[in-house]
Image (cartoon, rainbow, N blue to C red):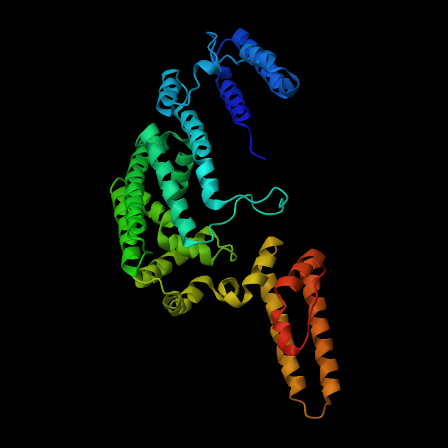
Amino acid sequence: MKIPTTLLALSVAINLTLLVVLFIPRDAENEMINSISAQKKSSLDGSASTSGTRGSKEKESQPHVSGLGLQWSQIDTTDLPELVRRLRAMGFPPALVNRLIEMRLQDLFAARREAIMGRKTETDYWKSLYAAPATQKQREALSALNFEQYDLKRKLLGRAYEGADESYTDYLTVQYGELSQQKLAIIAGITSDYTELRMETVRAFHAAGKNPTQEDWAKFRLIDEQMRAEIASTLTPDESQAMELRSSLAANRLRADTQLFRTTEAEFNSLFPLYKSLVAATSTTTDQSAYRAAQQSIQPEIAATLGPARYAEYQQAINPAYDKLNKIVQRLDLPISTAISIASVQQDTIQQADTVRADSTLTADQKRAQIDSLAQASLVKISSSLGPQGFEAYKKYSTQWLRPLGVTVTPKK
């Protein structure tokens, strides 16, 4: 059910009021709290009131936004540039102004976004509220709408609005390390400029009605390289190294490959140079087979870096044949060694089944009985490793290896 605009405005007003409570006298604070309570009650009782009575009550219960008796209705306006001007003039924190404008823009573009994406029926409560873009036309229309919303946001809030947002500052810290506020502000400006450049490039794709080619992807990589080089020019050598370890393509590749491996900081730093060379060798292609071949070529160096035990766990973690098993183990918060143990049970069972099938002294029925017994024994071992809940997930997602043995496992419904 769509939230009425009046209730959304009420919610925004109440939240804004609470945020400025700390900066006003105690008497005004008490008055504001009482006003908020009255406004909440008015909104809840509104359906039982006449239109004239409701209007007068709403007017009386407008929350004061300052100790001077200023009401939210005196600030609020559908003219977004004017709303920004008023909020800034009153001294609202930049991050708060940004969030409020973001909410207004979401509401402003909601109907057009829904027209593109459609809306699921309310009876489909178990599904996502909005459908995923299923067609190229939908994807292009949604992308264009997002660009339009982003452009309007920048025009309303200014070039470096991101730097005023605490959550964006936190994001930059994750990406580039513990830097001074001055440097983070410079980086925010640089990333903002290059974000606009990327958007202009994508707009050109949409205008030409084409999908990105290999050459186009190379342009995107060049834009990223130029951005990172400009950012690096503002950093010390140690800060540049921290940026590389946090947000370079090599670091992202390494994190993706070692997500299930649970690498330590020391291991990550030791493996990073190898992945840096791997990314450099495959930076001109999007062919995954080329990446896998290059990844295979550095395995001896990875083995030497990690040692036998940890390298075995690394191999288990990156093996696509065990992807579902590895994820089950991860969700159960078990060590990757559990997956290695289960994979070993599987391989032993397959080898023993091959031996049974090759035994010419056994009848077909005897072979079938022995293979079924081997499969059942393996499942008992695996169940003890995963526990009841994990074993049900395993039966559902990770028993394909039993099918060549003629064994079918049925999970609970």
